[in-house]
Length: 154
Image (cartoon, rainbow, N blue to C red; front, top):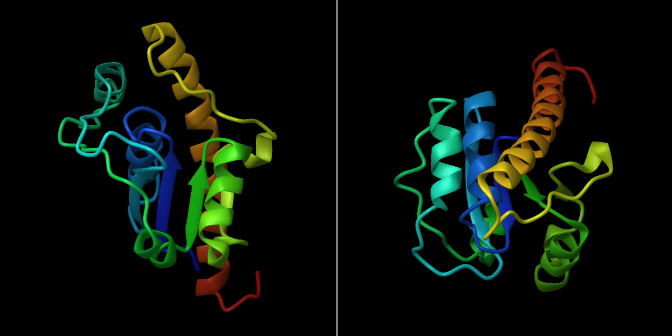
């Protein structure tokens, strides 16, 4: 059963806050948090990110970047990263995470590029990819919960 999701990127100001906001909205029964591998601790979400998610009615104005740590990894049932390098870095640093770290766009066989420093249009493209990844995971997580509630083995 997946009840706790951690979303990780590099800086925790663009991609992971987008995914966190969309996952929280899609899966209200799950606890969703985000962190970065190398963030500027305490930094606000990128203004492009805040603007785009506001269009969906999601408020990221209070988001502050933080560094992923062992407690976050251990407390998560599922850890979603943006690319293969991030997955490998997390699994090297936290070997106990193997088996629960996946790319957000795993089922599309795609990495999510970092839009930091790019145009608003690039942020829109990245948000589109993130939406697809969130939709894909949401369907799977809801199906697992449904099977679990009916006593079926997933």
